[in-house]
Image 1 (cartoon, rainbow, N blue to C red):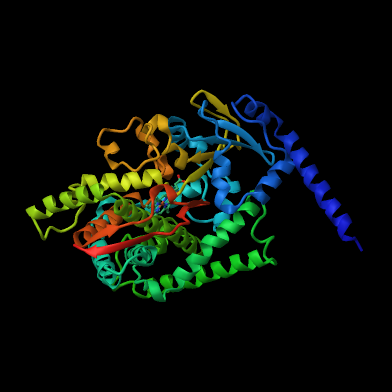
Image 2 (cartoon, protein in one colour; image 1 turned 180 degrees about the horizontal axis):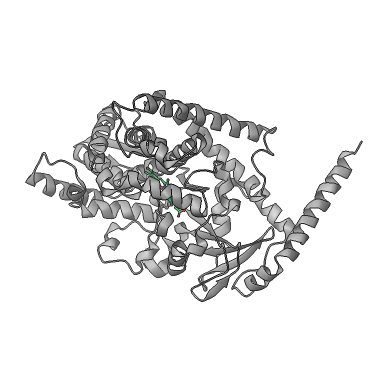
Length: 482
Ligand code: HEM
């Protein structure tokens, strides 16, 4: 019978052996990597120490603390892995567009835990899924969305009468239903009732489970190794809930095939036998899409309302723009063309997304040796891209980069690649036009009805930066009817 101490020694020796064998195997790559500008690599023990001691709300800030300002990329070594950190707009743009930096590293994305959806898929599998799913987001498909967004936003705005003139309230409770119910109706052909929905509770748990899982994912631990632990059980529970929910979505859609079925929505495409998706792929894609759509749009709409509530002059300009448009035609219907008549509102949304990159960091992996902006990156290098830091970088946005000033978009930006909240290239967010339309329609209907006030001070907003950016200080505003 082997005692616990011997077991620990066995584990430590195995780990060290793995580390050094792996290092020898990748000697050539390390030689290439060593020529890149960088900081000294962290030792095996330092890597462990950092993962275990950094509070989860600080992960991204911790990574950012290593990024050098004087070079477009900073090399670091983390647990035997060469990592490139960057906030350089031109470098990042090249990474988004190179076929050799198309895939995403396990190190960063295993935490998502589903493997057959767009966000995590690699290479030709990703291309196949993306090509098919793009059909759900064409200009033609966008034309049916304004009615859905208009309808659902009016329902939420009606609900807001419960809190008008009543002091501060928490925005997410009202905006969450808008994002989730529009998502169900337009992508799943399915009516989600937010307050009664299991999906919302599963989602809520998912966010915290995924973040708790992140450090284990960095050590390369697969989720099935954790299955006997409490964290493993929480992971299983969340995914059971997602699976039960989406089983029902699929069942309802299959049964409705000849009735209310809208063609070419995401679910229609996924269930079409011509496209050859397995049951598991269908569910993983639906989960991924929900993960991509819900939290992001909910938080950005709430952040915009807070920013506008803090800036009376901005609110005044939004309302003047609305009045001008609606004075011409008070019953105008929403369409993609009509939404172009609100350039100031668009600048307000863009400025909020610039300051608060809701996906603060994305990652890619080199599938081969590749030269980018004059630097040779070896195969299997992880590239960590800080959208958050790029969008606040003074060299692109000026000395007031950390301030809220929507007018900066009027003058034209110094480097158009420095604004990339949806990223870029062929893995750009599939729902970016959908999201912009959903946000604009909600905000137009909101500002036609209400004035918003926010007591929170901009400089006192505390953020949590994990996979998504969250305001730890909450999303509180008060509203009065116009
Ligand atoms: C304000 C709202 C949103 C923001 C800021 C946002 C941002 C992002 C970002 C940064 C990515 C990662 C891209 C990369 O790794 O290069 C992404 C991917 C994705 N998003 Fe969004 N997103 C939003 C809304 C949506 C919506 C509404 C949907 C669906 C209806 C959606 C579905 C997806 C999917 C499926 C992917 C994976 C795309 C791929 O890898 O091919 N997102 N999003």
